[in-house]
Length: 182
Image (cartoon, rainbow, N blue to C red; front, side, top):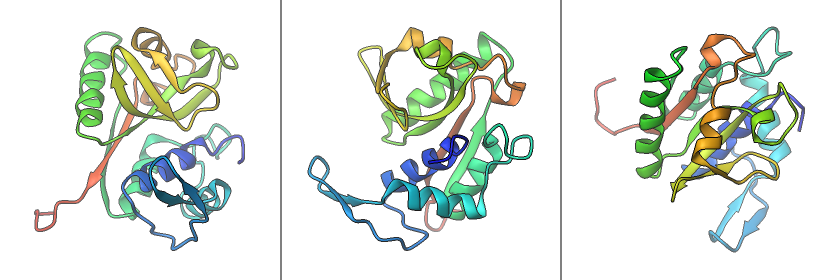
């Protein structure tokens, strides 16, 4: 995987979670835990990147939340994103929305300052929150960091070194409701 395609990997994680296969790729990897077949990560990430490449500062700094939402919408999901410059009220509102979504079994793509989670300093990363249990945040699309205490996650949830549209940012997706007005 390329160093700046974590957003596309997060999109792939949500597509897989929703059982969507918009690219008709083979799923050769069987997982006994969930009883399902999954894509080889590099192939699906490359396919998503063809149509929705990293686009933040010419792709040098990864992918914007709007681009991630477009990629999810192209797979026939309802998608939106939210961010807040406000450290208290804004973050709390978005965090409540993330918790509500995760409780409804709808994982959320989130931006994280990996330096706050023990990774390389000044590194923003798109991960996926798929469960919050006993004040522990469960993450996908992260290397070696799968569970984080909620308080520590919330410190990483603001990428202070990135533009404000990345602060406390979550990208939400849910299946479209059939028959609902567009």
